[in-house]
Length: 630
Image (cartoon, rainbow, N blue to C red; front, side, top):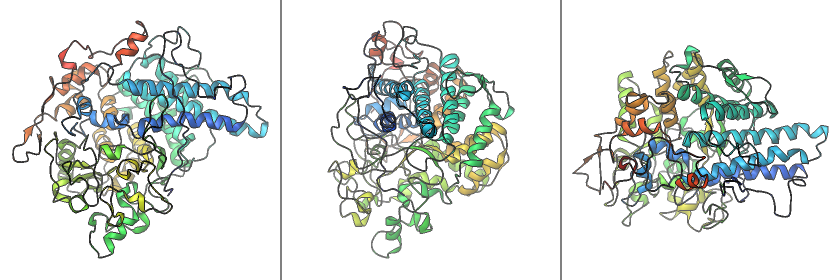
């Protein structure tokens, strides 16, 4: 395991819409360079790709607003409530599918277009380098990475905002400025980019370097195709083989006119056969609370002991070879390192972008009045903002599944902290709300007796650590990878696409769950349990529902099931409230929006009628606007 992963990131300005005639005013090259002269050598192309990857850090790392869209999608799903303190309105607006202001969702809009522009720049200029025949494989790998990142950022952009302009060049034409159909225009480009990446990149693993590889491209190709087929084409059960082929665009690396479900299955089978991935033996090995330093405290007979990991094999601890960051099932991820700053600067004032700040947002809110993070109250977990707490729904649904099958799923307690069961001295704060009694364990901040301070993290005790770059360990010292694709996803996608349960059974076996035959319901449950709090649930719900499916869809009904759940607000454990929607109902808000967020009004105005607001987001409709509940 790498203790301080070197993220491929140079802090450079990312582009944004600036005018109708110059939509993406982005130039990641040094100002004295021109597109005709830069890049001039392979290292220049590597720097361009590094700048493209860095957008992920800005989105997934530290920010006072938390721009991690995977956190957003968890909060928008039935896995999480908004919660947090009374002042934490933005997270609650996400949970209730409303907005606080008409530009609330602008940051990822501009960030993602900035990333797309950087990838376009690499694609257009890569052959400025006088590549030799011996360097052809290197050239194709770097080009494949640029195609991959353009496809990935475009996928996230359209999953958030739906129909948007499709930008495939650094020169923005009048045609490119027009909003186009995601279903008919954007997804063919996304899938073409993943096909190009697959065919251009070497058949070798990136091995935890933070770079994309062929197998990441094949995996995301499947994820994008399955969303397109389920959400837009309304294929309810992919194992029936009823998904249509999607037409591809002509570009380097695309060697066929279309991509079929059979092609996607073949790509995933290539990951299985040739990628060299395998599931970690112990699911807990994926998460930082299983680090060997905490394991040692559980066995030293002195003071604290976190009994939950005491039965693990030490070689399976998070910081051991093949586990944790760079583990054997990690296919693609956002990486972090000890290089944050309170004000890095640049277009987005990226602040703490190199720290996995999602740990702070999901951290325990306990003790905001003075005891926050005290090891005596919360050992081994540390303080945080307490936003996006797990819903009662995921715990209750999971427990019901265990009871009906008469088994115990290891992943439930590996993923959630049962506050009453694990932290007997946990106290609810007088300014919090929508507390369910659970917290996220996967990305929880972890403390040790050895830290010597309540607000330090276990990373400060790792070999080679010298000091927090922020001089604030609670906010700066979070270097756990944020997983974007794991091998278990490949296995579950294969079962969903083929109806062959052998792949799903591998995932079930590791969790201690009885191996079952294929059914769509079984796959749906396995995906929810395996990937809870990893940002996949909401878009899974959407593709299992289909676009314009109304209030009776899978997603609408699952979201509405939050209504009436008992929650703690303002620390009043003896006077619980019933969860209710802020303005109408979750089912209604989902049906009206199809799960898309509002396009920023500033960008709609800037585009002078070429960008249209999504349905369900009329700012004059009170159902779309934030309302104080607590």
